[in-house]
Length: 347
Ligand SMILES: Cc1ncc(C[n+]2csc(CCOP(=O)(O)OP(=O)(O)O)c2C)c(N)n1
Image 1 (cartoon, rainbow, N blue to C red):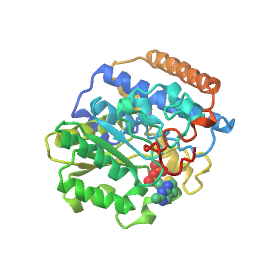
Image 2: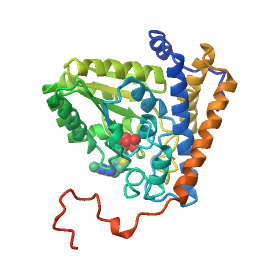
Image 3: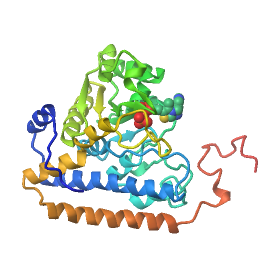
Image 4: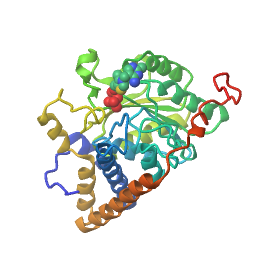
């Protein structure tokens, strides 16, 4: 990825990121992880065009700082749950890209054994609880996961991620109210990319500063410039500290943007080219690269080496997915119902 000389980080980003110094290792991890998400999804988009991937496929391109800054700020023992725009989070959590790509290809070697597809990535080992297609459906589940931690007496938190469209759901309001009342250690995160399918935030409500919705429940609530990975890390770390101390949930509105349409089949005609280009000038990966060069943490050659390594990793994931078998028909009902004698299973 070419490093832009045109630094369009806004004043707020500069101020926030100057409050805190991050190590060279953190920047290297951010760069490699965000570049992996980007490359992985660009290639997944191509594979969709080749009909190797079918059905729904929602790309996260442009939003990479949200997942990267969140994962770097939390611990291995914390949990994550999100909606269907879910390929990047497991990649950041360390799930094998081969298995994520294989899931997209509906192959038996995928994270959900090829039966979940794009919208249902899971990784129990890394406390990643999916991957949910019903808008807002994961919000009460995330509070439940966090409640289990509170009940067991740990200081782990659950990051519960949703899109801007989900905040108009009843489940959002009921869960926020209950979580605040019970001081549940949950971090509610709205990844506000400006649109719910083709409907802009402006068209859905008079309330467009979405973080203010948390104030109705007396919840600490903040907006975050989430095109910048440093800002995301700082906000998530603060929210997690509050939750670990027993002070309950926080609502964060990550202000971000998706470069692609809602899903691969959406040509995104409801927004202007200028709007898209404006966000691309604040690209999270370029901002990270510029910061690394400015701090002497990496040269352009170092960054190219990382990109070369990631490109090979993504190529390998496609080969792995392509060569893996589809799940056999006998597995169709496996892992669907907990109860072995579930009445709908006939033989
Ligand atoms: C309960 C429910 N209603 C409608 C849909 C159809 N639907 C799928 S995605 C979507 C838009 C959600 O947008 P947002 O929450 O902003 O997330 P984003 O796609 O921007 O990440 C809708 C309405 C659904 N999946 N579930």
